[in-house]
Length: 156
Image (cartoon, rainbow, N blue to C red; front, side, top):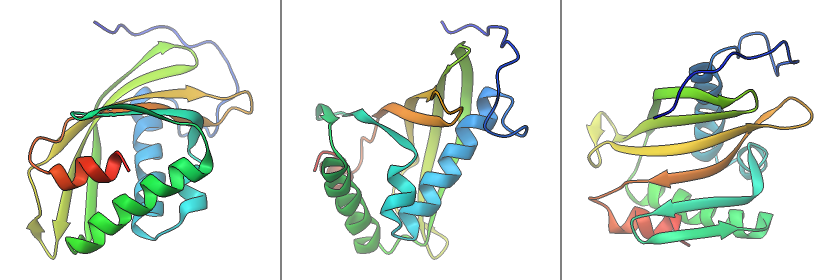
């Protein structure tokens, strides 16, 4: 079980990002907006390489920006194919594992014109503060049980 730890006075990315949930929600917003607007650079800048991605099909490590771009493009194609107009994601739970690491769970709903495209699915991520004070995603595990297509896109 994860437990909360006291966070020392360390420079933060912004004063608004003081809780683990704030950090998680910020990264969810940034990556979601970038994915929906086809902004690969904005998306990739929120991740550390190597980045570990896990689905029900297995685990893989994205070593390069080219690896990330391939996965980004496959997920974008999935969203376009299903005419997703809103990717609603929110932090369900987040806590500090150390002053520089957050463990967070979020839920995603893919919506096309007010219609849910598939059942909501959870994901667990590790978020790490970098030397420059910015938070980045280092690991994500997705549990998507009703979309082989989306699992395949994540494993592209």
